[in-house]
Length: 467
Image 1: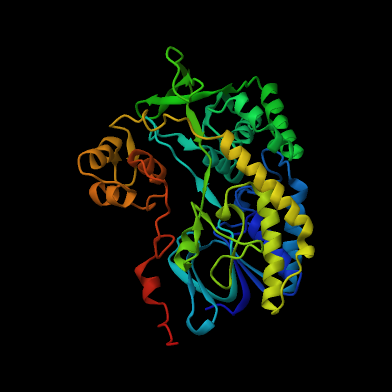
Image 2: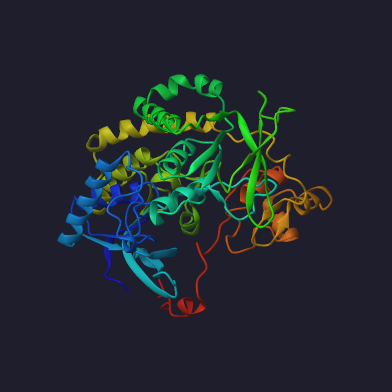
């Protein structure tokens, strides 16, 4: 059991760092708990320390922001105001009885076989997001990876997923992923984006509110042009081909309704495919605490407070919007927590700049969500033998049978009838596909644990004291 702290921050990405630093600057003792070996999250991911790399393989566009956050974290750690627990995988946040605060339970180290508990008066959940996976024929072949996964191994391990890569799907993440792979030495055979220019033009007023973001996208596109990569707008990957590993993909154009345009299919040879269709919020810990959701996002007020007293949330877990929005939300949350722990109401003027940025960035994120929606017929393109749930090896045909012949009308019924979602990932990977095949909205499933936990760790927990 670690020393009791005033604030426990779960996640050391942009939101968690901003929240921890804002609270520490106002005298709050903070414990920052993160699964990675270094702070920064996916956005500021650095090469693993064991690689002893002097610099990242590709210059980060926000390097100065990262240096400012890193230096501030180092100062507060040296002063003893912030304790940074790396490689600590939080599996549950427990609200203690009789208003005694919270217990943050984590598994330590790469093996995750030992447990530690951090006691805190308040908790900031900055758990980020994970990639939405939409299955298609051949997506389970080796070296078919998510776009974020390709970026992560390049940033963190300095490894290319392949020599000839196709980057496909939809969303603003595809541009930096493709540009990073090209600059690291891969040949990007195609950048396949299902959204079209007209969708961007229809949202131009909202997008124009963030000229820096638009300029960043143009910058990535220009870098790709230098490597001879021209995006295939309003196209999609139909199928991945190969025997023991990926050898090629079939791509096709989409009509204005988002469906495959007849006669446009063509095959592109490659040895790796990085495919992504946006992100979904990590809400496991919030759900365990009983925090209310709005759709798939944790619901918060203007101070980033959830409806559970003592629990704040910031970043992608409250709605996917990018690093700048996460920084703004984290800063607001940290200031709010510091004031509330002192027993005072925070002055909104103290975070006026961050609040204005938050408002603009949320509008920008909403516009991007409308532009980068997945193709309308992605469910129809899954053949019956397309694997939906990799953990339990459940195909689309079995899910369709559960819905059509057995009357399943929601994801839980499909899980009970087919085992889709019962595996190691607990439906995180197959959830969107099962919901799409079932015709129901994607709703997070409430679980007591956010990850598998050894029985020995559970047995070693202290008995709860009575109220």
